[in-house]
Image (tube, rainbow, N blue to C red; front, side, top):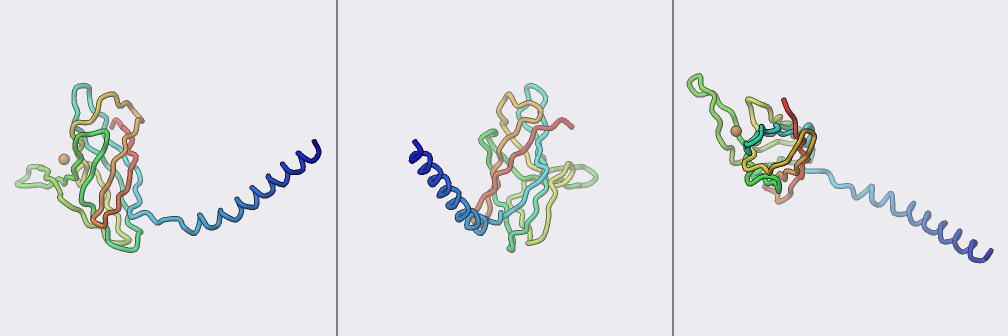
Length: 152
Ligand SMILES: [Cu+2]
């Protein structure tokens, strides 16, 4: 019995040693995200509607220009980047095919500016529910964003 306890203590000590050895290696391998996203939300739709808009803050601290080329979500049929423009005093919106964000720059998606349009959003999402939106970049990298349902 005593022998067994001893070997368990030894095994535990070995585990702890391995943990301490691997932790600094993992920290060193930490990947810098191509884009840092904050405050990602989408507007909760009234019942019977499946189209809505999404907003977020995108910051590029990756060390290189990042170009957003497309978006997708399992929770919507289609996700597009749009921009509001004023034409002859009328507010219109158009689809933006790609958005370039220089290193050190931020782009805020807001009502009246750049925004996401979500088409065919699946039913049953309630306040504070989240949906994953994948931002696909020209570099081949992508960033998954958790956007929260918001009523505003
Ligand atoms: Cu739009």
